[in-house]
Length: 249
Image (cartoon, rainbow, N blue to C red; front, side, top):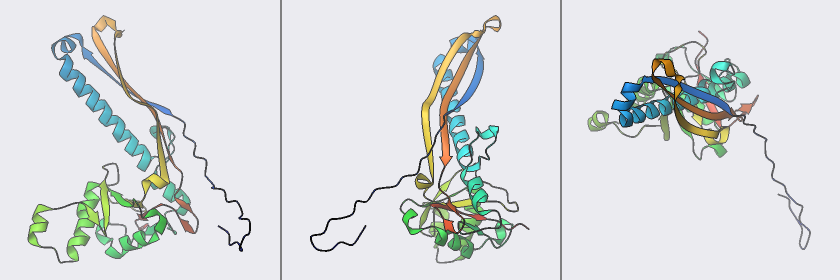
C-alpha cells in the first residue's frame, strides 16, 4: 500500500506468488490371491484389499511428507523434518529450536514455548503440533500434568489433544524413539508450508493373466502424487512451520 494525497492517483499494487512445482510420482501395491479365494469371498476380499492398499498409501504419504530425505525410498520428496534441518541445521536457528537435552525426559515446557514463540503470527491461523503418540503421551502430557491444576476425573477420562492452546495431531511416522539431533515434533500451519497434489487417486485394478499358470488373481493399486514442502523459512527468518531439535549429546 501507498499513502496518497487528496485527489491523487493511487499506485498499482500487484500480488506476488511463489512457483511451487509438483511432479507426480507413481506409487504401486501388488497382491496375488488364489482363484478359489476370489470365488469364495469376492466382496469381503475386495473390501479388505482396497482398505489395506488405501491405508498403505496414506502411510506412505505421511512418511514422505514428514520424513522424506530426497532418496528413492520417498520418491525423491523431502519432508518437513529434513527441510527444517537443511535450512537451519541441527545446531538450531530461528525456525528450529534446540531442546534442553537429547533425551525426551530432558525436554522442558520452556523448550516447547520457545518453539511456539518462534512461529510467525501470520501462521497461527491453523497452527497445530505434529508428533507421534509416544511423544504426545511421554512428553507433552507429562509436561501438562506436571504443571498441576488437573482434576482426577480429567486425568482418568482424558480429553481433546491440545498443548499450549493448540491442537495436537498424532502421526505415527514421527519419531517415537529418542535420538541425538532429532526433530521429534513440529509446530505450525502445514497448509501454508507444504502442498500435496494428486494426479491419480487410489485406483484398484485386477487381472487373471499375470499368473495364469498358477491360477492366481493379481490386484494392483496405484496412485500418483507429489509433496512439496516449499516454505520453512530461511536463515534468520522462521517460516509457517517450525520445530524442536534435540541436543547433539
